[in-house]
Length: 73
Image 1 (tube, helix red, strand yellow):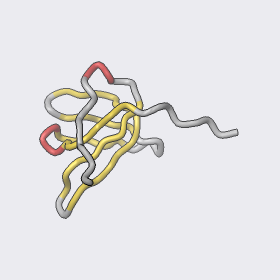
Image 2 (tube, one colour; image 1 turned 45 degrees about the vertical axis):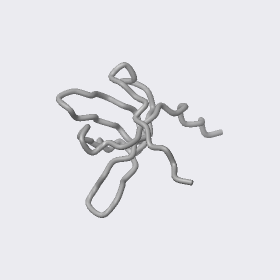
Image 3 (cartoon, one colour; image 1 turned 90 degrees about the vertical axis):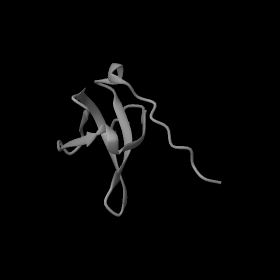
Image 4 (cartoon, helix red, strand yellow; image 1 turned 180 degrees about the horizontal axis):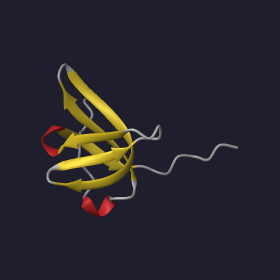
């Protein structure tokens, strides 16, 4: 059984934590972080290490909002 890929985020999710999958040469790459912006056909996601990932809409194959990271105790 194959997984169903779906893009379930919109510009209204800016500020939310999201997980994404995009096409890259040789396969796919995932990014999880806060959706900082989505304009001009490009999503910008701030990962927990502070790095910024830019994803072109045309390469995005799946995305959804996920809960905030659990706090460390």
